[in-house]
Image (cartoon, rainbow, N blue to C red):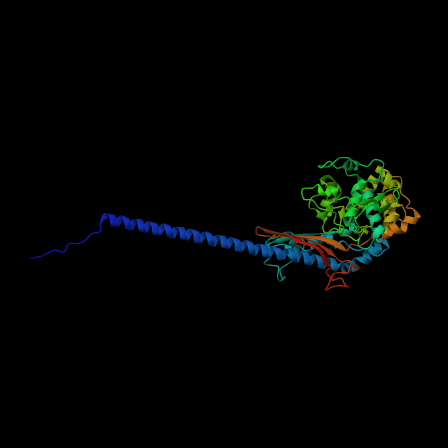
Length: 450
């Protein structure tokens, strides 16, 4: 008798469970795959961003250091130009502003290979150059001399009453204090958000009280050109205590330009008029806290030069006649645009210019020869008091030694900006381990990387 084996078939319920398990497994694996892909992609993006940021950082550092090297080598560049300058003016060449052309000179170090068409058109061939074929990004750099601005900080080489008087008279003249009706008077005739009125004198004394070492309030007499301490008691910190974040006078030198924001009177209107007319542009600044106190006659703006002259000779026509002031500013601005080389070999050249002295090779003689001696475009010559000529000349310089260097590097979407202030002044004594000598590439006074 034949017995057939019965074939066992899974139940339908078991088939459904298996399908559900398979779908669940696939779903879990899909989620794991997506999560792994997301983590891998995120890690790759983060790694790429970190790589780009690191490359951008070192491109910005390289641009900063190359700028320092260029400034340090300026004397060697000047030796090549000196014969030409001496033949044209009869004097030796002053310091050349090589820092004004730093972005163009460093273009090979900051321009990727596929963006060098302009450089190639200028005859610059990088065909045999090693190390410039794989630049990861681009960079821009600019350097600005701080010696062409009015120093409102404790001067580097002046002390005591001489330092206070110098800063006070410069600020008073720069803000139009010597004019019968100054266009800047409106800045000092309105109250701030706390209801406080800050006059021109209040602002000047507040700046000095911030960095002088004593706790006595400074008094300033612009008529006598003198400051004194202790006449009206201690420094008034009450106004600073009214702020949401109260503070007191520092009684120490400024450390950064932004610290001026803490001083009484340095509101937005004053800042936009005298400190930084163009936001985030160090070249537009009229004030500094880094310079030694000497004004570079070849770098300072006409407004700054006029302010310095008027701080020593406040009664001359350039200082009390607004029309003559405007003529001086406009004519000097125009000359610099037409002749982009240093105009003055010595500080006395500027004094001779405002006094209308010199030969046909001197600036005033060239102007009168070109425009005519009776031209209304030229300011009327003044006469600096004899006792002020030497002190005025000593307050000027024809070279720069402190620079703001701003380098911006871009690699991919990563951007790094380094702002630094470098001192090359030979008389400045740096801290250890370089005490007693200034390094060839200068010393950093300020360094910030964003």
